[in-house]
Length: 164
Picture 1 (cartoon, rainbow, N blue to C red):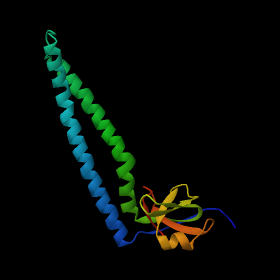
Picture 2 (cartoon, rainbow, N blue to C red):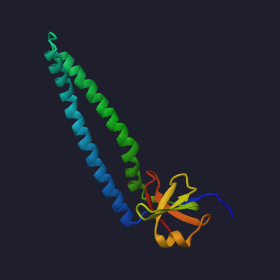
Picture 3 (tube, rainbow, N blue to C red):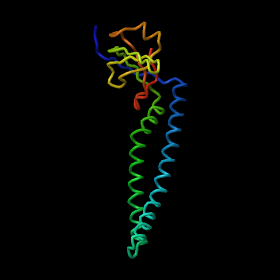
Picture 4 (cartoon, helix red, strand yellow):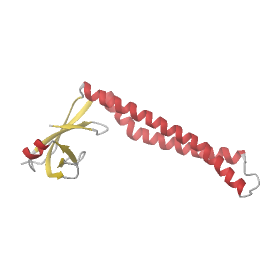
């Protein structure tokens, strides 16, 4: 029995593209909300710091230069952090939508496990992209360790789509 991994790509079907578009739209809204909140905090934190300094009796606590420098630094950090997170995560989903392909990978079951806490069944795989998957009860009992299993995931973002 060969344990070599085999991969190939196929076009995404309409349902999978709709799933990716919905996920991309939801995540884009979430990035916008987080960035908006960070922008507001970038103005509030220096203002609160000025009040703290004023209550301590510091002379010239409400310095416009200090306020705008603090705001600029916080806005820069927020912008860079959001931009990096956006490029690392959301760009991959957008690439999957644009490319329209999914990866099909032939893997082998390395371990089976039943989780009595929530009545779920898992297969552990030898795939570098997906270490375990939840499976149906019938598949759990019909397949055994060492059997071949085919999984599907998006090519760039590696979002798990299913198994067969």
